[in-house]
Image (cartoon, rainbow, N blue to C red; front, side):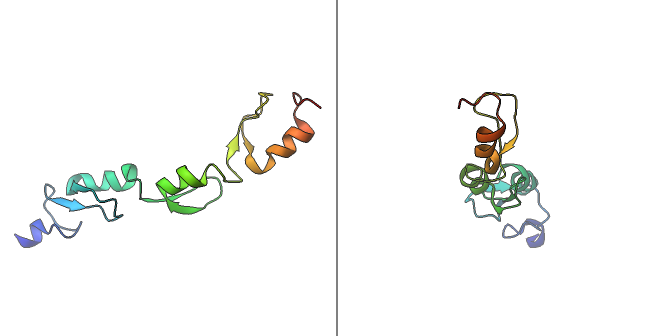
Length: 103
């Protein structure tokens, strides 16, 4: 019975016992719901920026990293039709290739 319940580990058998999230988000979930939480919902789950491979938590990557990521794609502010310009190339686009940039 102790192995079945084992609330101190995600490895116990009982799917209805509450267990802590291993990413320290301070939430408890039924063991049967923990995998979904860890992979989709936990803001503190490990996450990698899809643009530059920076690794941190989901919350840190989307909240603090993406607004400054040099490879994050941005649309042209002049709406010239370019929709995915890496942040690091936006100035160059505006100065050299944007057909709607005023000179």
